[in-house]
Length: 157
Image 1: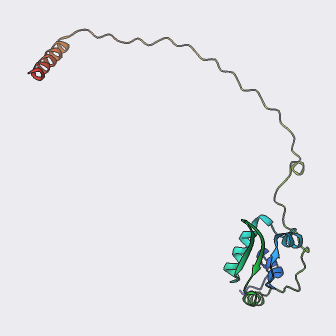
Image 2 (image 1 turned 90 degrees about the vertical axis):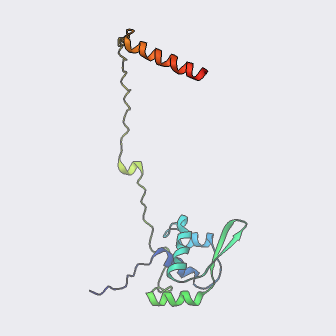
């Protein structure tokens, strides 16, 4: 059973369509162009996919510690990848699809508030103290006392 190529683009492939020229693309441009189609918080994951699946070399352009733009430095290799997998950058129109909304809102669920019940009060039961058995002085105790006395005397000598 032969598998045909899917016409649906993966998020990193959508990102490749705007980055394939090799010019730096700012985060704001990416969000404006693809903000409705990709999750912006996963941008670093998409860059990782570009590196591992499309063999792209991605350069992060920073302002201090903050990344402000990304640039593909080997655009020809990335274009070859896009041809090989059948991604046509000219056919892709940003904004034609929207990302899935996975978060359900309370109003969507038609939920009704529930009153919380007060916890039941428990009463501690008083118990009578246990009796402790008393020991009677027996012959065993006398023998132990004699042994202890002998050990003390041996230590003293």
